[in-house]
Image (cartoon, rainbow, N blue to C red; front, side, top):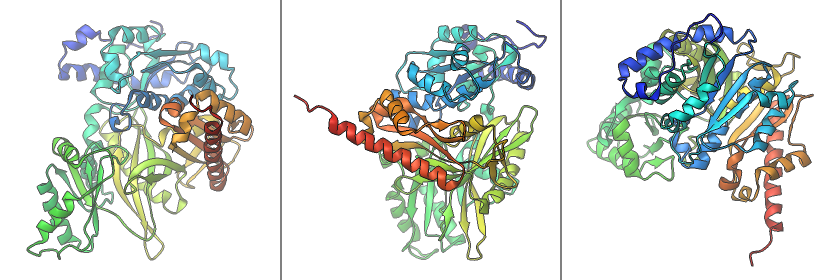
Length: 529
């Protein structure tokens, strides 16, 4: 081991299996105490610096319900290959299944000022050959020999760290097994990221949030809560029920309250219970009894649904650096859809300036509080904003995501490609050349017709129609989740432009071209004999 920095030894699978939670966290705390020195050392361009990327979808099982979808979600973070712009950095990228070589080539070709073959020589791809929808971290912990192989690819553990998607005890154990610190939130902070926990935190720090009640487990609990909320706000016409650990809106349900007996009426509670039994689930594939069983097991909340003539759903991305400094990274307007408009589909960046500064102020308050609790890495705060009759926007904090999320990869793709920065005071993203940049992104460009295309077909379409990223103008399209195109008819993309209108136009054009090419491919396919 080179260098004069000391790091705790890796923990073998045999030893790890014998450690209780208290001892695992003692060792984890010791390891995480090294993150500051590792972070500083990695900015000195050493020839033995490295990162290990393990994009395990441990929390989002609802959105990674099959092996191929799990793989595509893991590949969603291939934008991190752009870190190989650093000429000496080595990267180990781990997935459940092998990544198609042409997909790797696509991302390496995006690197400005870098010879792709040189970047490829510093990239090690490791896969576990497990197509099950289990999380990648679970798969790795079941295979100590794969973890040993990853550890052997780390040139110097004093100058390496783990980059996860989310952080649970599973990712903690992977970090312990590799003997490198993890750039992510301590799993013990997870309660603050639950729906109940973040509402309590919003109240503690003084950030506005919707009327509601936390820590509910039964329909009776919810009925009592709604009766109490109606007494406080008789005009409330709908509420949202949320699972504590629901992700991307999939754990939400809408309950309409208009037409109920007046608050305090003798038959009010029975009528409320009737509405609860006919709640509208955001997930169309989840039966009510299954949803209620999840609610009883993990608890949840009910809160007022914020409504108005003009309403938006922005979010703020932040990060806490080793040492505790808080950085405001970006604002986004979320694009929502689904049964009742609560499912995350994509985003626009940056958020509209009319409310961007207001939500960043509240998000910064939350970030500073989390930093005091020992948070580390990226996280996001979701808001709902409604415009009043006076034209002013009123923000309400609704969720805290202590992990990377759906807005992380579009923003970092833009940042890595342009070296630009978001300025919270102007609510604009500017490149070093002084050019403004905007993006529109989605993980959900979906159509059955797209199943007729392969990744090779996609890259041919990109070449023929110019759907690439133009490095000279720093505008264009970057695709992601490419591996689920053929099986699921789904792909993600980030469209970058100099104005909001241009970003939207490029997005619409890419969508139109892909669907038209898919239609033509189906028409030209030979008929079955």
